[in-house]
Length: 214
Image (tube, rainbow, N blue to C red):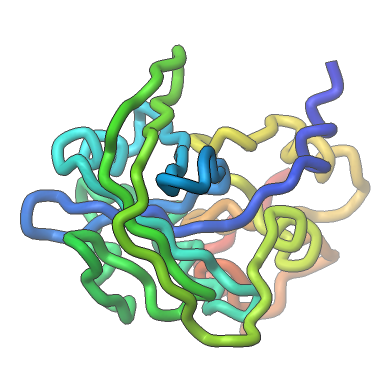
């Protein structure tokens, strides 16, 4: 089975937000889809290992902010490669509270939902949400697609993401170049050597956070 075909499916890149008691938290997701138009209903898929999944179950509310192609790349590093169990992800992020859920300001727009149903798979929970608020932000900005994230930013999917492919790692191993892996977000730099002043394009850490893989 060639799972690379899944890359040709249409995905966006979103920050799913919810509440951990009184504290906002969230994670990166790309499996979000509209189910019905009236009443407006949305589904989002969340890995059982994601702390945000547990928080959505408890709070009964979630939002998703649609990242733009020019959104700050460190947003993906913060929300995609750290756990809300021990990280206050919104601490250094500009956001607003909308209908009891956090939304990221540096985005194309947001949707807020209250959970009305859910479906369980062996690894993920699919939450069905009725839309209670939505709006556009930053008129004229182009929404980031998963293909753009993968092909232009060269980002990798977190291992908890539905679109994570083990083949991602094998592709680089097959190339006869040196590989340097960001120990924070998993971004892979390929080249003869890593510049001393190199900054990770995803999570913005310096070259000292990269490890050479042989």
